[in-house]
Image 1 (cartoon, one colour):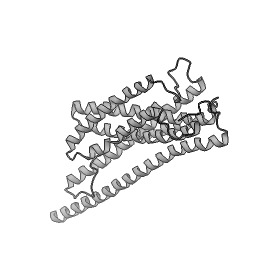
Image 2 (tube, helix red, strand yellow; image 1 turned 60 degrees about the vertical axis):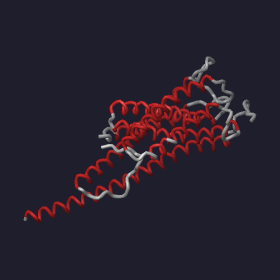
Image 3 (cartoon, chains in turn blue, cyan; image 1 turned 30 degrees about the horizontal axis):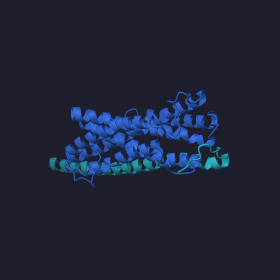
Image 4 (cartoon, chains in turn orange, blue; image 1 turned 90 degrees about the horizontal axis):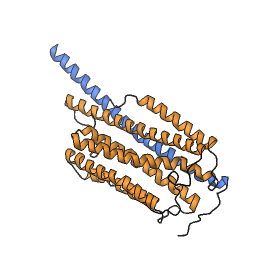
Length: 240
Length: 67
């Protein structure tokens, strides 16, 4: 039962999002250089971090699928990647808005952080057509898992490569020796990160619950020898 | 492309549009996702209703045969 605990999780997510937004707009101080524009940071960075971790989590689920051959893990991997791609869209759009406000350009091709995230996003955007190209469900699940593991391994490598590169303009928040965020900003950021991570978990659970319900309906139809209604998804794995 | 590294912060009325835009994008993404999930839920509900009708028809047929 994938829906177990979903109500509590949803309430916790909404509460955490409300708390985070309150902290962003009423508690966190204005940043000296960027002023009010820096408020986008509390949305953009947690979205990016959650999306990247989500891609890696999708890879970990894919390893579990390849090891056990249990289709449940393929569904987990698919849903983790699916939600992370949606978050990735959010990262690209909010990042472009922030870039326009800060630098005067929607996109800067010279900036490795932006381009590397776009590469990761485009890599995962090929996941759907890749699955769709394979008819056989078992082969589809196996190949998709191999893809998820390979791409999942690429994410931290890509992150490290960019981290080591000398960036010109993209802010480095935590890793620099000159210090990081002041306490109040750090607290706000961590709350936002927790809220966005909770949102990711809730949406993954929500999606899995919907897939499970859809799978149960198909099982009922088969048990009743009833004709299938419409055409089901060829790429989304079934959960029962 | 030269970037204005030392550019001063935008005034509040100017910055507010961008900040609001970013947060609205986030909300819109969530709403679109919830809308798609609602459509899926409707389809599942419709299918459940069809299955319930078929099950009831089968039961009636069985009762008629046994009677």
